[in-house]
Image 1 (cartoon, rainbow, N blue to C red):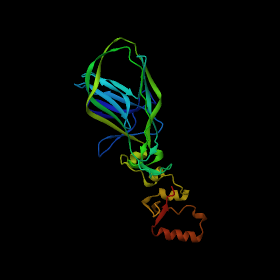
Image 2: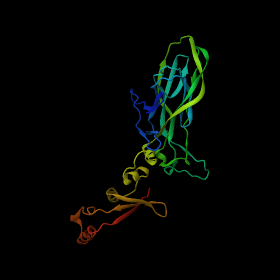
Image 3: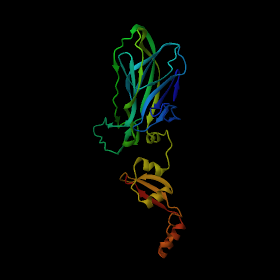
Image 4: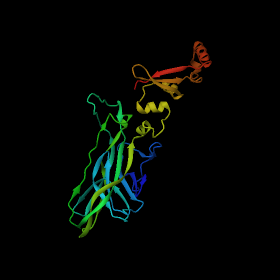
Length: 304
């Protein structure tokens, strides 16, 4: 949730009638809000007025740099109330439909023609961003109501330029597309007049950045988990069960070899070789005793 001047702005789920907000985090460096999301989740923008404005306001909505194609006008000293926004359409002046947006797995492009992007590779990817832009609204005279033309906005998913942002695996990047769920509202066809507005000077922008959990870790919004867990997140390991057990006992360092492969430095704990002691030979037991007298480093190369 972001509260700026007159509005509270957040991303809410379509999964329940309460429109539960997605989990949010605040950056300690720029104090902006980051929303933790996952692919296939559908959502609406939630807009709530928390303070009246002495001037009329003109509000537009942008997702990943693309306008949703319509605006809300708020007359001076009038409360807009609580509304949800998505992909908007109107028919016959009496039926309006607000279609949900949806987080989808991102597609990628390169502004550098020499880049080759393969599935599952690590490449640059920026955060998704949803913005509410607020302008001064300028009165432009009255118009008759009751005979509004049909209208339909649309939205196409943007791809990510691999030159941008933090290193995140392709599978964990998300962008926005069209959802399936809709809220339909019917109103009576009443004749009358209504003030129209033009867009004046911009007053402020309310941004919400969004990304999957791994992306939030990569840009420092969320803390990194233990090194083993982080390596498993960014590239599934092919370690054996025994190697995995050693890794889970404590990674001391992660480095890269000359071929660019990750090398994990592990502590070989004193009790790691004591299992199944009954089946060990005398020579094995003697070797275990020597190992218990001093600690050593074990290096494993990731083959992700």
